Image (cartoon, rainbow, N blue to C red; front, side):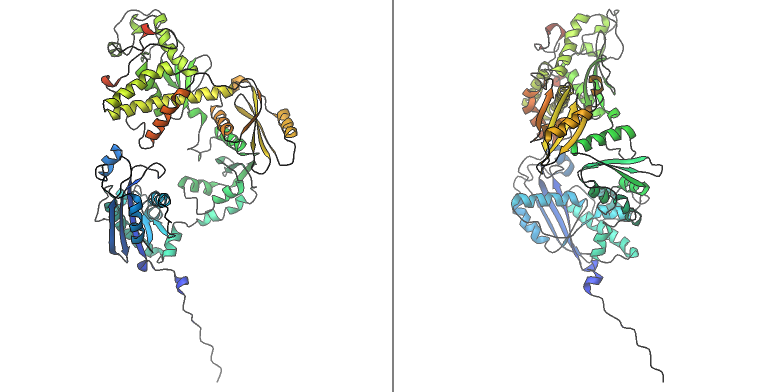
Length: 604
């Protein structure tokens, strides 16, 4: 008889091969309520958590937490948690051990996990406790992977909870939101079965998976060198799709083809990219400047969050017999006094509102001749907010000192403009009208920051030439030649080479810049200024005078620091209400003005 063929050999897979079944994994779904959006300047006010395994709830954890300071009113409105409610609650250092014990050995789950886990990690660090090494799942990311736009318009918890018929509605209270997230998690798990995802390893890999098409384009980074510089992704027609900068070009470009890059618009950009061009630079400043210029020149469609110079806004005091304020996009020499640039319309309008609170500048848009004919005055004149030059009640000579206060504030001294505003802020606070005081305070802060920025940038733009040097960290020097605020040459003098020799070569090949050209590169001048003000930067040579006007905004540094602290828990533009009549500051009247500094008079 012929020999029988050998039977196939079967081997049982190991646990490592199969992974950890989801039904056997313990999940702790956690949600926090906080006093703000960042653990750097905010604290936890409530922790809520639910422990589940195999679809069953094993336990719940909930406690209020004393943040150590007052809870902002708008947070109390959102969450219902007030300062009085947490007055007797334990501090976070007391709560953390209990929570960590509750979550021991479990996989942490949160909706928008970086927020909640970021606060918990910061709390552990601040309390001297070690953060446990554990896996985590973000239900927001998981929902983006598993749901389509046709099913849900967004992946917010308030949208997903009713979609999955959650038994608990999100209420911005920690335990309720954690319970709702449990139902969302189980609803998402039901979507995993048809995809063949049954283990924890497959689940965590789902949120980190790389599109095969993106993986196949990793070769685009092969020719990119290491070191600082600028990179350009180019599309099918060789058009620039995206411009970026990095201190290590190769590592940065390679990251676009990994699971670490999850931005939807960048994923779309990489799918279109056909080539990556790299421009090596001497140092980070040259890279940042080149990036800014390339974005301004090409306006890549996927750089929509970057700065475009033409989008900047300026507040202009017009050049006419009776000047007024207007918000414009271009600076034209000789067309008036310009303050800015402002990043958006809200900031520009906030600065204009602050000026109108202090000065009785006209707000009408019609052009008024030097000798206007008689007519009826507007409501602002009746309220003492305008001298009614349109009716002839105020002459050019009487109006000019009022406008002169704004001009003097922009050029050198904002004291006369800001003094009545700050006095009103103090009065409002003394009257316990804190919301009105905060609105006015933030408007003044926007105005002062704009004045400070303009004065600092203009002082740099006025210098014909200066040479800067910074240590490169390896015994060499990074060199920059700046003319009228524009970077005209950049180089690197490695350790052991002649700095003066390198500098001579840079100066001989540097771009020639006129004073007029400097007015078109405010963002570039600001990049240079930041680099110059970093610790360790040395001023090697200077042609001209580098100095800010006196007295400038130095006297208001303390006020700006307080305003910055207040902004960490409040959006300065969230309240667009105009201040009531009682909340208006004392005004500078035309008859009381004698020059750049004015004595203050109450409104009529």
